[in-house]
View 1: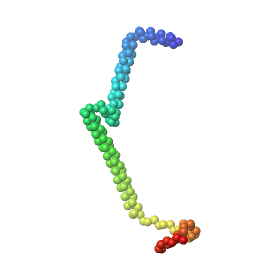
View 2: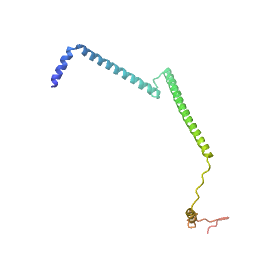
View 3: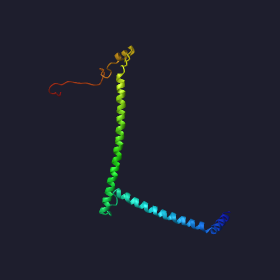
View 4: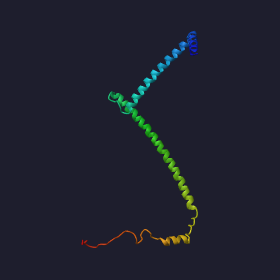
Length: 152
């Protein structure tokens, strides 16, 4: 069956030479465009390497000055964006501070809340173990020497 399809395709292709011509023209355009894009990619990669400081030995003084100017322009754009981000962050923090000051003022106007009184159970617990860390059963031994230390 594939031979029938091939024969039909071949016979119709030769019957319509204009479509055959358009197909080859389209292929030629695609090849030309591919070659052009490959050349652009190579140029962009070379430019990127130069901007990264690689392969500068073959550059003339004018090329080096152009690269330097381009880098300075890029740095100024990056700094402007960074400053814009800082400004935005400062504005957000000022807004947060304003909200906290307002909340603090609101809370300071409220009457103080009474503290819950400890129950007798709580007092018993405090009395039972007031200073557990400094009990006499600790392992710390101290001696006080005044004057010269005598070895025995």
